[in-house]
Amino acid sequence: MIDFRYHLVSLVAVFIALAVGIVLGAGPLREGISDTIDEEVAQLRTERTELRTELDVRSRQAAAKDEAVALLSPRGVAGTLNGTRVGLVVLPGADRNHVALLEDRLGEAGGAVVLQVEVDGSFDAAELDAGVVERLATTLEVPEARGLDDGSIGALLGATLAGADREGDVGAWLAAAERLEDEGLLDLRWQQPDAQVTDRRPPDALMVVGGGLPVADGDDVDPDAETRLRTRLDLVRALAALGQPLVVAAAGTETDALAEGGGEDGLVGAVRDDGALRDDVSTVDDLESHSGRAAAVLAVAWELQEEAGHYGLGEGAEAPVPAPPPLRLGTTPGTAERAPAPEPVPDDAETTSDP
Image (tube, rainbow, N blue to C red; front, side, top):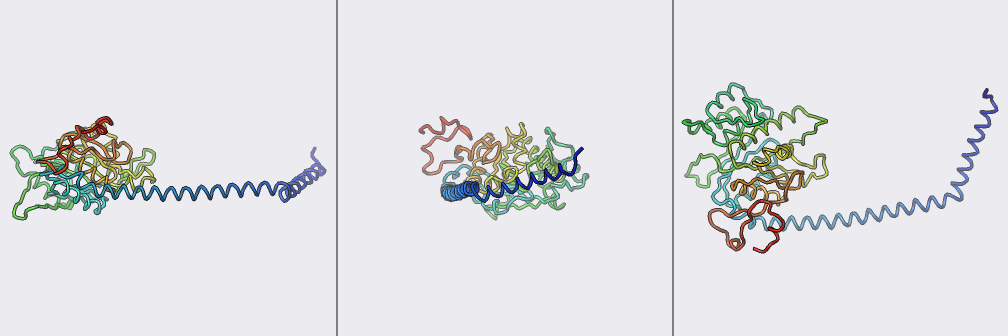
C-alpha cells in the first residue's frame, strides 16, 4: 500500500530534476542552445532577404513581360476579326473595367461589338414567370440539349441571343429580347458604327463574360451558387447546341492565383469539366491580364473557324494564348509572309519551325 513516504520521495525526486535542469540550462547547456537558436534565426533572416530579393526580381520580370504583351497585342490580333459582328453578354459579377478593355481589343482586331447584353441578377436566381418563359419559347427554336431542363431561363436566353427564330416567325428573337428587357432580366445596348444604319441581325459570334462565381466544392455546396451555375450553364449549353461561335471568359487566375480554387471562375471551370461543352466552347480564365484579353479575342477568331480551345493559367487551360488564326478579309501589313497556324494550339514542332 502506498504510504506518505512514497509521495515524499516522489516530490523530492521531481524537485531535484527541476533543479538539475535549471542548473544545466543556466550553465553548460545554455551556451550551446543559445548559439543554435541564434544561428537558426540568422539563417531565417537570410532566407527571408533572399526570397524578398527574388520576389522583387520576378515582379519586375512579370511587369516587363506584361508591358511587352500590352504593346504587341494590337499587332498580334489585328485583322483576325475583320468584318465580324460580336455580341458581349455580361453576366452578374463581371468586372466592367475588363469588359471595356476587352471591347478595345476587339476593335483592334477589326471586329465590331454590335450588341452588349447586361444580364441582371434575377437571371441567376431564375426569377421569371413560368408562363412568360413558355410563351416566348413557342416562338423560338429552344434546343433540347443534354443537361437542359424544360422551361429553363438560360436555354430561353440562349435561343434569343442566337437569333433562333422558328420557321415563319422572323424577328421573334428580337421580340423575345425586348420582352426579357421589359421583365428586367437584361439590358440591351445596340452599338452601330454608322448611326444612319440600323442592323438588327444576330451577332456572328458571342462572348459571355462571367465573374463572381466560386468553383463548385462537392464537400460544401452553396445552394445559391449551385442555382447560379446551373442557370449560366443552361445559357452556354443552349448556345453551343445552336452552333453559335462562343467564348466564355472570366478573370481571376492571375490576380487570385493563391486563393481557394486558384481564382478560377466557376462557369469557366464547369465548361472545361463538361466533355461535350469543352469540345464546342472556348474559355479564357485570366481576363484581367493583357494576355488574357488577347487570348479571348483570338479565341473568338478560332471559334469562327470551328476550333475550340481553353486558354489562361487555370486548371484545364491548354495554353496561355492561342496561336494567331488566319486573317479575315484581306491581310495586315507585315503579317502575310508568315503562314497562319493550322490550329489554336499547334505541336511544338509546328510552333518552332521556320515559316
